[in-house]
Amino acid sequence: MTSSAHALGGVLAAGPGFQAPGLEAFYPHPLWTFSVLGVDFEITRITLILWIATLGIIGFLVATVRNPQIVPGKLQFLGESGYSLVRDGIARDVVGPRGLPFAPFLASLFFFILANNIMSIVPLAQISPMAKFAFPLVLALICYVIYIWVGIREQGVGKYFKDILFLPGVPLPMYILVTPIEILQNFIVRPFTLAVRLFANMFAGHMLLLVFSLGATYLFTVGGLSYVFGGISFLMAIVMTFFELLVIFLQAYVFTVLMGTYLNGSIEAEH
Image (cartoon, rainbow, N blue to C red; front, side, top):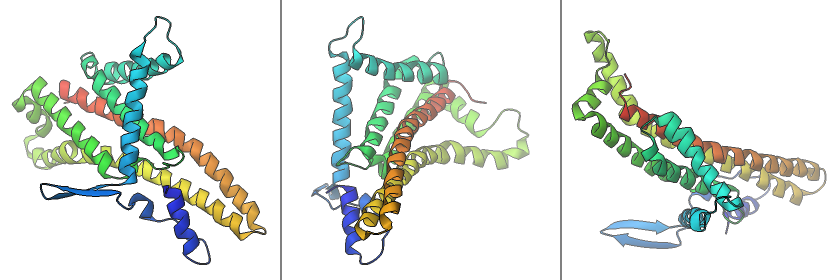
């Protein structure tokens, strides 16, 4: 059952009047549960969507380079354009002259997020795994470990943490105030906001689509003058779908750009 159908069932079973969709779409019933070393795991439809999106983007990228041509076909052109966007626009321009070795990682990050975000408008899926906070959080933690490791590798442990904790040119007494702020910003706020930005946009987009689509369905069942408002709600659902398509791309791009800026600060001292 899709998230929209699940929510629709709740709306129609709730009694008279329209009941706004809640968080039930984000907590589907587990399809399979198991334990590993005493830790319980659940496989839900959102997990399956994540696997399908991942396999789909891997299949797409493999297909684009399977039979490369000097004059690329449509599929090869699409894949190369996406990779060039990340390589030239982020790895080279954002990370800097030493950013090209990070292009494969940044491209993988971009395509993975993009593929999962697209699932929010794919029929029978209709939800992005990135609308569950755990998935963006794991991505943010991976990025967090990488940019700190790169900073230590490039600048050395002492210089990397010294540049973060003790800003050059700041009067000595001000370190009492500035150093805790820098610790909070670099080691807590960065990964948290990286995850929250992606999560919040995909969560809000899914809820808006649910409200308008389920609202249209409900109004069409009421009859009478409600058909007019049902049509408006249906039209808004279509408009929001196209708007969501824009958000899908932008959030994948913004997440990757931010990771590029963090890598730039790790390779070259920020202060």
